[in-house]
Figure 1 (cartoon, rainbow, N blue to C red):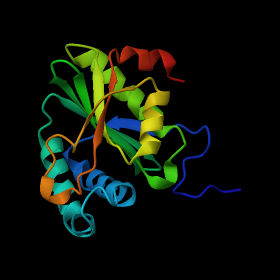
Figure 2 (figure 1 turned 135 degrees about the vertical axis):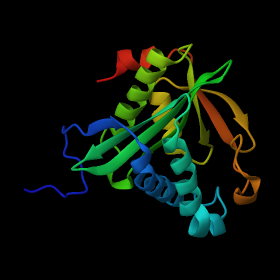
Figure 3 (figure 1 turned 60 degrees about the horizontal axis):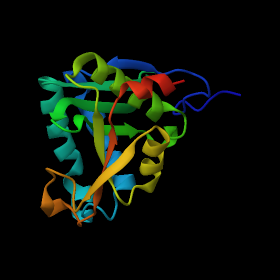
Length: 192
């Protein structure tokens, strides 16, 4: 039976590669789509239904045009973006490198891409950061992501009223959790 062109076949490995400036549009599109699907209620509807794409395009155009102390890895299948991860090295003196974004296309969830991308972020942290600690922020309402991170050895170490550094005008005030890995190399030991 032919596979749907939008679906990664079971057991099939996507192509992973570093993102470049030319990838900003497709990364922004996946990022905006993910927020619209999973952050409804956390972010203002006016933002998600309006400016989110322009906002994400501006962010990714800047990030990928001149990456500074960071790495963005894309997962592609049949030349189509199916996921990405962005890590900022040594972002916090205590918690280490920040996984600032991890998004997988909604029709690709539970195919192992998130685990593979998280493993690539851990590899990058071990290779390029001054320390091996790694962390990320996840909205409290995103319980599926929390379970995913805990299953991969992450620990919730604190809760804050809103994502650090986010624009308060577009938020509805959701609490956010810091998930941490004191040693990212442990993710490499557990990877398939």
